[in-house]
Image (tube, rainbow, N blue to C red; front, side, top):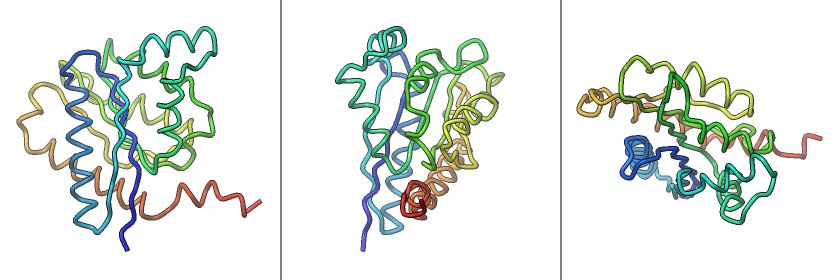
Length: 190
């Protein structure tokens, strides 16, 4: 029997095309392909935060959630797993990325497996995914996979980036298959 898993892909890239979105797409494609080889199906919903920037800013100061923003948040809630990707500015995740996740209910992502990814113009920012994103998602009680990804300009042609993407995708699929997130939220334990 084939399960169909829902994957929410959040990209905080601000340009079009964006290297941040390209990294998220590469990870997503690898996840879909590996799942299929493992007898599973994955359907991805992409959330482009640049298209929601005004909605995010408005919600930050007014707590009013627009229908478009509600749709993005609901996609995260319905997802079995996440791929999140942010550009790095001044040694940190983008403000747009952080502001979006600040809007979420603290219980929305409990137990959900997530691949952490970041891009930057220099390798000096290579630890942002682990140093800043991992604590954010730990606070949200999500379950970051062990392998995070980072891509600077010189990484795109390096086969090691694809190997890391494959490893992270495999970790994500195994966690989704385990049903851990559903079991953690199962209220029959109460």
